[in-house]
Image (tube, rainbow, N blue to C red; front, side, top):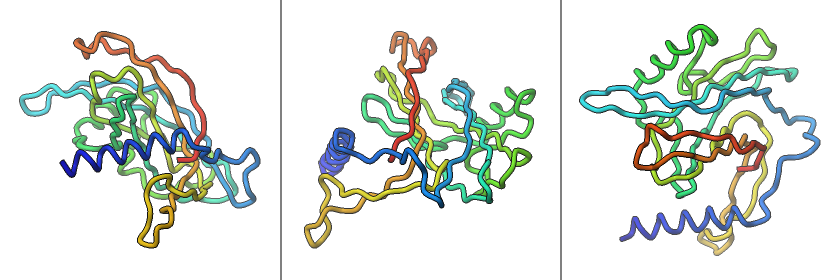
Length: 210
């Protein structure tokens, strides 16, 4: 029961934050703000036999280039959120064998592909230091009709807002730290009863503070 209540509060908080006047990234970045150049492949599925089960995973490949004037820290946070409010962190429950199969699949185009978990926490400046990174999620709710991918860590731009629900011990709103995050939206076509028929349709992208 306690778990159910906590989950409900989290979803309520997410909904309120989504409808509130949440800050947007600056149109003109500050003098110390940076954002990596990023290109990406749309998500694909991969199915592997793990033990006695066939398991489905989804992944996308992003290419990161640091065109700033300095080396930058890279602490990514990548999540998949369905329109049924399921939130999945990248890499959760993903064996190394999944990345190895993805790397083999894309060896021709991305010979130096790295997994998100092992890419390191520095992106060096210059195109010679461009990185190709695979972001992997386990399969999501079959009833979902849309997903949003959030890729954080691509920028150091941050802001702080008051949580619309949570309070601290003194009764003041809890501070929520947000950072500039790439948002990618997809619709899902196909009969939920036949998961192998699921097709993603790109709906658009943007930068959000999350």
